[in-house]
Amino acid sequence: GAVVSQHPSRVICKSGTSVKIECRSLDFQATTMFWYRQFPKQSLMLMATSNEGSKATYEQGVEKDKFLINHASLTLSTLTVTSAHPEDSSFYICSASRAGLGRETQYFGPGTRLLVL
Amino acid sequence: QKEVEQDPGPLSVPEGAIVSLNCTYSNSAFQYFMWYRQYSRKGPELLMYTYSSGNKEDGRFTAQVDKSSKYISLFIRDSQPSDSATYLCAMRVEGSNYKLTFGKGTLLTVNP
Image 1 (cartoon, rainbow over the protein chains, first blue to last red):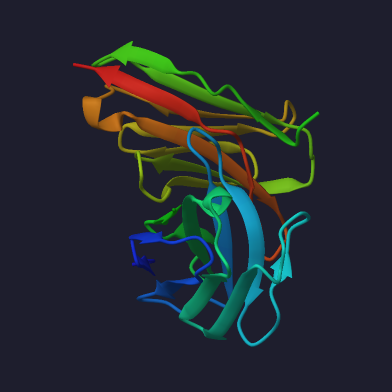
Image 2 (image 1 turned 180 degrees about the vertical axis):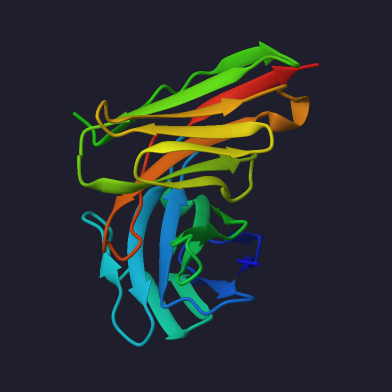
């Protein structure tokens, strides 16, 4: 159990375009999902916390107008990188929190590698 | 001082060795402690989950939490080349909406 999927796994786009990344919890309902960014050889950097049916909470320094998050249901959250630029190239990972089974923690998706040309 | 400190390594050991990975932290409110394993270009995978102090064992893995010293450890016995990965410690406080604070991760290589 506790499977989280992400789609796409890899995307290459031109500068100025927008990219949408989907995060789904496949076998449980997640009231809270998290979006992280990870640069090579760096740890995870939390971008935002997303609660179903409400606005996302962004970490300091993360532009909410650039990284749009929609948590439409208990199993789906999306991250849209708007007007992507080469400096947005990174590994984006989502996670979903799972409660009620004595292991209340985050379960991660496999990540999406974004390359902006 | 960062909330969670973790030696980034890299750490290289021969197959069969016992590996010790550690994190220290400064926030005494942390109650939940986790270890994640991350293979290159993959998302982190939950390895061990511990609440409060004590030891927890799962196969070749043992997690220890010493809240008095604000120190957590992960031991890997009989290490295998397939254990080669980055190991991240993570922790959170009660009622934090599951928000985790991560260490930087330790890159481990187990040589055959």
